[in-house]
Amino acid sequence: MMRAGLIGCGRIGCEFDSDAERIGIYTHAAAWRAAEGVELYAIADPDPAKLANCGERYAIPLERRYTDPAAMLATEMLQLVSIAAPDRFHAGLAEQALSTPGMRGVLLEKPLALSVEEGARLVEQAAARRIALAVNYSRRYCPAHERVRAALSSGSLGRIQQVGGFYGKGIRHNGSHWLDLLRHLLGPLAALQAWSGAAADFEGDPSPDLRIRTAQGVQASLLACDHQAFSLFEMDIVAERGRIRILESGHRIEWYEVADSPYYSGYRLPVLREQDGSGMRDLLLAAVADLRDAVHTGRQPRCNGQDGLAALQAAEAAVRSLASGRQEPLP
Ligand SMILES: NC(=O)c1ccc[n+]([C@@H]2O[C@H](COP(=O)([O-])OP(=O)(O)OC[C@H]3O[C@@H](n4cnc5c(N)ncnc54)[C@H](O)[C@@H]3O)[C@@H](O)[C@H]2O)c1
Image 1 (cartoon, rainbow, N blue to C red):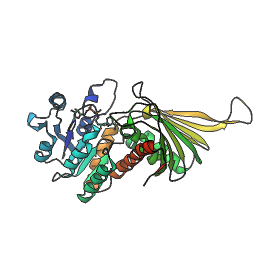
Image 2 (cartoon, rainbow, N blue to C red):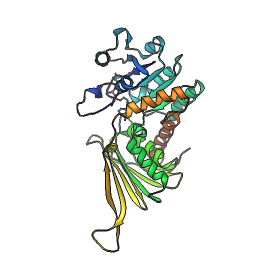
Image 3 (tube, helix red, strand yellow):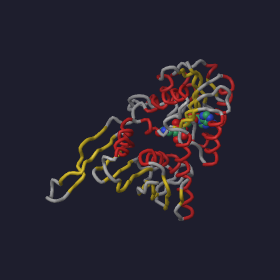
Image 4 (cartoon, protein in one colour):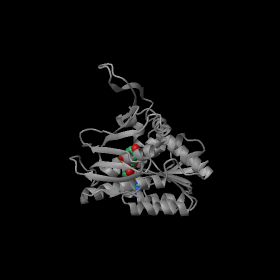
């Protein structure tokens, strides 16, 4: 049994467990509890009420509940840790976790950090100490999205013509999910250009519209919408022989095939063939199990620090491009 700790007992740390609408495993605490070969051993959160709530739900003994994450890391001889604190604390907490003697795997909530400089330091630190560093871009752990990736890489849909999509709530905070998904599905990103939309920022993180080019020459347009109105996360991939629409944050995926138009002779249309609603269940369980296996085998996690860094580089380039009005190349 490896000992796992949790830093941050808020919504994705623990509280989503109380949401009756969520079926399956949506929190780090539930994931560590459900995964084999690991034990949710200790928890930390500076907010005593959040700490008590998580401690009661998961029957963590009082002496293993910490208001100071550093004290937990120094005391409990953890081999694995999840970091589910707000974005601005990710880099500092990850640095502490990666400096902890005996640590073997860290699962960090996205974004990796708030700056590329901080993120790159974490990736280097993890590599130097041979600690597996995973970043929770959750769609990478989703079988329905892996099916999309397999279809695209098989070439069965033909040339990709355009990718479109929507996001909201900050380019680093939520837009980086979209940038990571684009990179995961279609390969490295080469350049992007941002321009101002009307969508709301998230805690100072702007939500620009983007035009993106991948290294393979695919063009993508990402438009921001105001998260205060409602949540919107969609990706629409239009290829030569088909179309795939990732809708409702990935809970529903529509598969279209190009066929003769039922309306006019001589025209071809993408026709809806299948709706995949298998969705986004238990992705955190898949993420912690993957990290555990990465630690055992020495391979990289499915979404590793470099992936987190690439998403952050693209998000940071978007912020630069928004300020300069220029296209930004990506490393
Ligand atoms: N991967 C995903 O799809 C996904 C979904 C939701 C949230 N998140 C990420 O998870 C993180 C947490 O989001 P949330 O919605 O659960 O937030 P939240 O505010 O509900 O919870 C954050 C918790 O961290 C605690 N905290 C604050 N400062 C801390 C510190 N210095 N050390 C330890 N704990 C601290 C807070 O008391 C709170 O309990 C964010 O970075 C967010 O981007 C990711």
